[in-house]
Amino acid sequence: MSKISLAAPEAARLDRRANARMSPESVAPVLLLGLTVIMILASRLISPSLGSWSQVLMIVTLGSFLLVVSFGQGLVILSGGMDLSVASLFMYGGVMSAGMIGANGDNIAYMLPLILLSAAAIGALSGLGVQLLRIPPFIMTMGTGIIVASLALGATGGSTLGASPELLADLVKGSVFGVPCIVVFTVVFSVLGIAVQTRTVFGRNLYALGGSPGAARVGGIPVGAATVAAYALSALCAALGGALLTGYSDGATLRMGDPYLLPSIAAVVVGGSSILGGKGSFIGTIAGSLFLMTVDSVIAATSLGQGWRLIVSGAIITVALLCQSGSAHSFILLSGKARTLFKR
Image 1 (cartoon, rainbow, N blue to C red):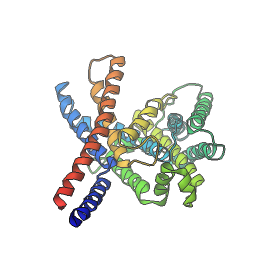
Image 2: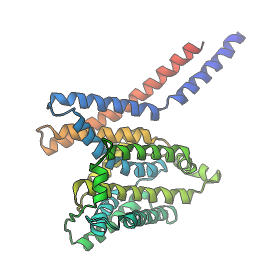
Image 3: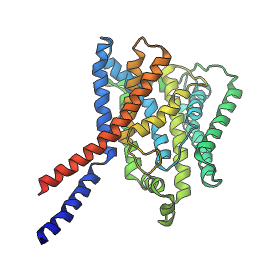
């Protein structure tokens, strides 16, 4: 009888340890990457030109812009907020890069950092509004976005700016030793993003803040500084994404950031993060960004109308969310039971 009573708590403890090791955040990226590979291979059924290396490179290139924006958005979501100003800050980075740097790019060494820092200052103001004035993030960031978009409209008169800095164009379209620069950039940015979110005090503070703001304050975490820094980094990343897209498309428009607002949130959530904050990983966001770009790439190759493309895209994302949550839960339970059996 004593052996049974000792074995049950031990099995429960092993179950909990197994579940802790196999979290939903680690399962979601694997599932998404698997779905991405399947879609790329299956796209050859639509057109022989799909599923090639050129298509993969295009997905990585377009996905890199979304990835940069989603990293900043993910930090804000991790803290329990949401940034609706990323579309305007994305446009801000593109318009400022095209208008203030220009094609020659002689002043890019100091002008680009100035543009990014000014975007970060705008994001910091949103963070201050959320933290000090207690304005809901949804309202505060939406207001910030409207102000930035209105100022940009007044400054440009609604015209398209077509001067792309040469250095940004080389970064997006060039190659180093046969390796596309955008691939190198994506890898380096991903490594840095993972390190910031998981290996720094700032990243751990955001997890604690999103999990329980009250407990974070009691624990001595600088809640105000962490909140402001998250919104500042989100704005900086959005502006960087806009600058990169300007280099890719050889121009900037006032609506260039609109297609990245909802996908930046979707990439974070599809990647396994909680929309309520406190849970998530940048690896999942990376997988989510590639998955969303693959969906758009495959659907764009079909002969469907724009309305049907949006319906199909939304259906695929919804199914991915359901599979991600349900399969992750089932996989965790099965892996935990299997580990317990092998430990006996």
